[in-house]
Length: 115
Image (cartoon, one colour):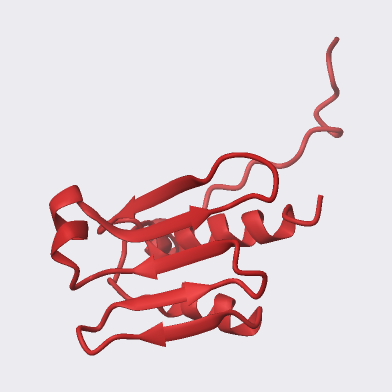
């Protein structure tokens, strides 16, 4: 089956200067802004690590820039999900993962949590 060119989506190629989100500035703001807007409990520690828990208590997000154990594993973001039905699972993101990518992951997770 062939689709006509008019039915296909246009291919967008952003200019190189528009790709700033492909690298990280080691800032947690995009994730923390999202979680704060969603009403998550957010706690920061004297060591500059941040812990957030969803309102239902089933999802934990840790930003761990000063946690030696996280650094040994090469991660700075730790997400733990405890579904009502099923096993707990974890997703971790490394130091060089842009916070915007982590925020996108969490947005998708929250958007699909009601299904």
